[in-house]
Amino acid sequence: MHWIKDHKGDFQIAANRALGKDIDVDWSDIRVICLAPEYKKYDLHAVQVMGANIELWQYKIYENGLLNIEEVFKKTFTSHCDTILLFGKTTLTFPTSVTNGL
Image 1: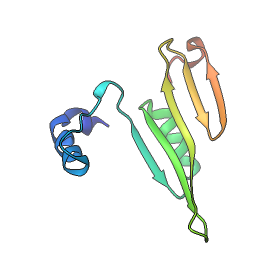
Image 2: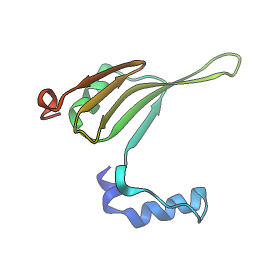
Image 3: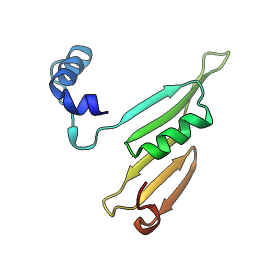
């Protein structure tokens, strides 16, 4: 995440090469999205304590070729400064007074 913030020009060039020259990166809310077949409990714990805008997504490819992608963890900050933690299909919302320091 820090590399992306420190090298916006390099990232913009890479995005333009991969997606076309008409692509503009929105730097207002950058995040890292990790996609893997599975995560260990240590991975989940690490992103919970990092405080960065990191999402964990898990995928599974079935024998018939069907691809399933499921959100495992996402930490977002709302405009009211409340923290919302998403675990799969369960959403937990906490007031700022509870989440100070997350």
